[in-house]
Length: 192
Image 1 (cartoon, helix red, strand yellow):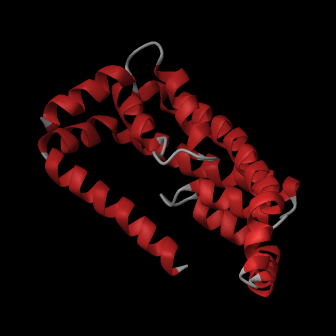
Image 2 (tube, helix red, strand yellow; image 1 turned 180 degrees about the horizontal axis):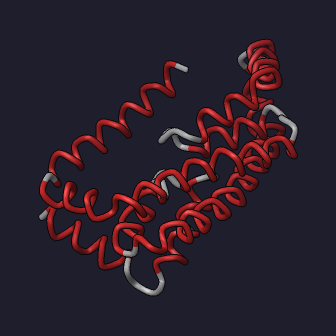
């Protein structure tokens, strides 16, 4: 069953519409969707290693625009949803501490978390809610998302056949490690 799913994803990754779906997933993941674009980027780069950087560019641009939407969601929902709840529970001081922390360390938070498998939407929405400087947010997103996707693409461009062979011979191990990584990312997020 796992082998069939793997083969289907590779076939989808090689289809003519794959870049469009990659852009849609990257955009949505940065603002509201739970599945990271790596789920398509990696098989697409494995299927067509020479186009890996092209796919990374699609991912980066779509992720940045999705991040802008996430920022807008955080900024607009704060006033209409979060602020009344904070007032109801008398958490205004806690929010102000969060906002001060994000104002002080926001750039570092964006750069660090943008490189990890931790869902980027959490960073984008938090940046909007904290009213973090939008221009700095966009530039940090360009740097961190570009680094993340181009690093994956570069590795797959140069080592794609070896990676593909490794995945195909150890599919269960790879999927288990990926699941552990995703769950670990959420646990790290809870701690931070």
